[in-house]
Structure formats: structure tokens, C-alpha cells
Length: 256
Image (tube, rainbow, N blue to C red; front, side, top):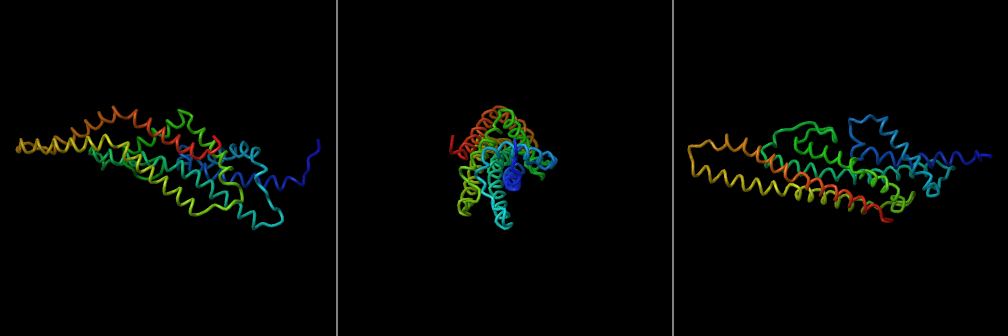
């Protein structure tokens, strides 16, 4: 079997373009794009996914090897698409951070912070716990396979070389952030009710027993009761989050 060597430059260019899209997405994906994961591991995963994706969409890349400028523009286009895909998946975790912040405030743990390994910065302890639990469940339930499927179907939505409207990207980002914030409030809904009832009860107790140091009793009691509520509703909370993540991924798969 003879190999046409003249096709190798175009094939290499197509590989680099596909790698730009996949690599940009992997750098932002939940569980893979974390700051504590070595860059070599991320690049290895991106390389493996590129080797899987490229044979399926090789004909989508029409590379002009006669000029460097169009190739660079096309690569920038692929990087932007990868960032959009990865950021959409990443924003879903913001819902757990919002819920964790509200829950921590209602439990009296708003001042307790730790390093969030998914973002590499300080975050409330409850939010970090929910985020890590969410990432773990995504892999435990094989929901990360939906991300790979969305990457494959992204070629039907964002064809290589096709102009991406900045208005569409801005609209997608706005909807993603608003949906994540709304979900965060919904997940923390039971704790908003708990905080309201608990504080009203403390207020009534303070009126009935003025000599009692309500603050010293209320803080540990709110933490203990808050953990009890968290233990009761945690399963339903994470189930709702998984349904939301799966729904977001299915919205990015028009062919399914």
C-alpha cells in the first residue's frame, strides 16, 4: 500500500485544528481542567480525544496550505469554540457554589473557608464540599460521556470555519450563568426556610427568656440542625444537579 505523502501537511493541519478545539475544552472541563491536575495529563487526554474525534470529522476541515493567515484564523476559531463548550460545562458547577454559599450563611458557617480545588481559590467549606461531590458524581454516573458526545455533535452546531456570532455566544453565556444561579437558589431553598424559621424561633426565645444568652446557644444549635437538614436533603439536591447537568449536555447535542 502506497501512502500519498502530499496529504500529510493537510492532515497535520487538520489534527492541530481539532486538537485546538478539544484542548481548549478539556482545560475548562469539570474534573479535568482543575489547577491541581498536571498539564501533561490534560494534554494527554486532549490528544486521546483528538485521535478519536478527528477521523469522524476529517472532511469538515478544509485547510488552505498556501497561506498561514487563514490557518491561524481557523485555529483561533476552534479555540473559541472549545472555550465555549468547556465553559458551558464548567458553569454548571457554579450552581453548587451558589447553593453552598447560601447554605453556609444559614448554618452560621459563612466565615469558614478553604481552598476550592476546582477553582484554585478560597471558597466556603460547604460550597467546596458540594462541588467536589458533584464532580465525583459526574464521573461515578458516567455523565462525563455526555461531554464527549457533546464535543462530537459540536461539529454540527459550530462547523470549522463558520463564523460564530458574538451575540449568540453572549446569549449562551448569559443563559448559562442565570440558569446556574437560579438552580443554586433552588438547591438552597430548604435552608432558606430553615434559616427563617430558626431565626424567628430564636427571636421568640429571646423575648420569652431575656436572661438567656441566645447567641451562645443559637450558633452551635444552628450548625447542628443545619447538618441534619443537609443530611436529609443531600440526595435530592445532588440528583437535581445531575438532572440539570444532563439537560445542559443534551441541549448541546441536537442530533440526539
